[in-house]
Length: 147
Image (cartoon, rainbow, N blue to C red; front, side, top):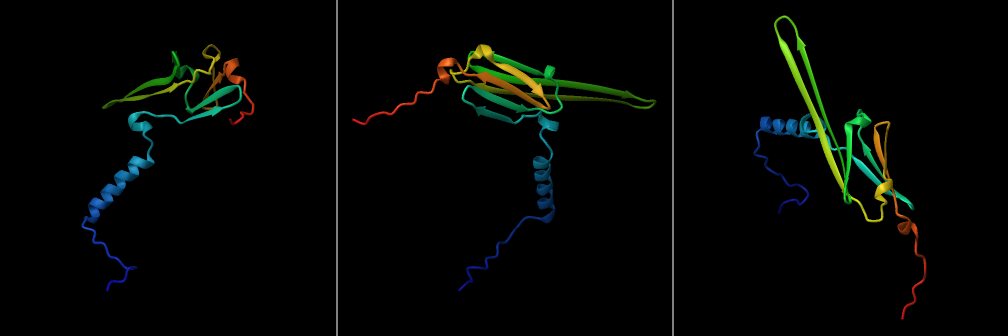
């Protein structure tokens, strides 16, 4: 009878291919996707008694890099950056391009006063303060009788 604590598993993979897969996994997970595919900034959304606060982390950007659109109750925050550089010396020319873009959309609840949304960009964080309508702020507190 076999010892249940000792199980050997035969691994039929060549060590070189294992190393190659490990390096690909490392590249995929360690290096940010911003260099290859653009970035998708992290977002925090907090609900307070009288407003919602949306914070989008986008360090290194300027406030002019953002485009914020409101279409009905859908808020879209996007950015598109394009950078080109060219270096010429005696025997070679090097030209590099860098493109970076993202777009995040959020369906806003009907309780938000769409006319009073304000945006601010400070220390790498884009903040949107979205006040609630007056009728949404009123909390109904009462006891309901069971019949």
